[in-house]
Length: 465
Image (cartoon, rainbow, N blue to C red; front, side):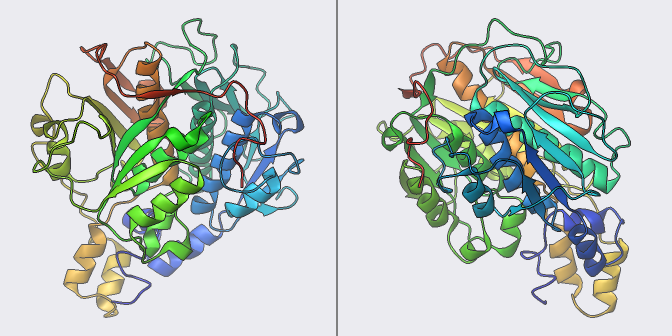
């Protein structure tokens, strides 16, 4: 098996092109994605706002994993970086560290504008991000709509960025004719369908309490998105944050295509070690668990009682409520070329045991009959076994994990602020307004997950390096 066609080397959205039949070969699919380019502009007034900075950095980090022809960033980027993310002192340094290129707007590329109000209609695709309170979304650049409400919290910026990159990819990929022409968004405080995300919500609290002790299960697509979201939060003293990082896998070439904190220099490293290094640069304390997550161990009393799960296998999920966690937020993502934009979140323990929720493994889509797979077999590049292994790998997009992580982290933040937990959140990004949200029967009033106070104000001396 060649490196080019190794199951662990193939870009997970390039796989979408061959599984869907859009491309007849891997080479054709890769050429298609190398032709995708993105422009990101930041409004001058937005450069000093840490939530708008969160939207910018997340857009760049996600965009360069999807638009392989390059992401160009324009605007007054010499502004100080006010987020305590380890990407440099200025926005220019940060976007370059994340793989963006400073330059002028690329006229024929889709454009995402961070912040600012309505502007003149443009040809092609152009949307602007919107953040307010716990709400985030996107509008066409010329839309006169605005979001009402107070100061935004950083996960609103992360949410808006994920929705923007999803919409831009829908445009270039031809997945939806209305892409870029619609308002898309939701509230992380009240993700119910009946909530208008553009309207002010008096029930939204100011972000005051942040989780201090968490156990992260799985450090791939979702696990790294959890870490990214935690990194955006305004911790007054990040050294008091204790994270347990659990995984057994090694970073491969394909990891970077879905995982927001991975770069090519990490290939071959244990995910636990690479993510611990990044997390400690952010200022958090870490401990590592390099073993499979199964029901044959118990959480100790001095270990984090709250877990964020990013596993992609049913066996591990069935054990989630058996090891002693007081609260588990689990997110699962679609794996096939038709459903990779779907996500389903659970908060455990709930009415149903984890073993009942995940009784059977999901059946993957049968894609071996696609032209690209037949060509690999005919050319002798792969044997039948290798072709089956490649076909079984998941399609994945980093913006899906980013949105799911913002929702999952908000479950923890909401409980810390006296809000409601959700038994289930079921979303397809192709039809966000059709989401299913079910409130949890447990208010978790007795939960003591550990918390820290948020910083009173964000400034450029909060730990940037």
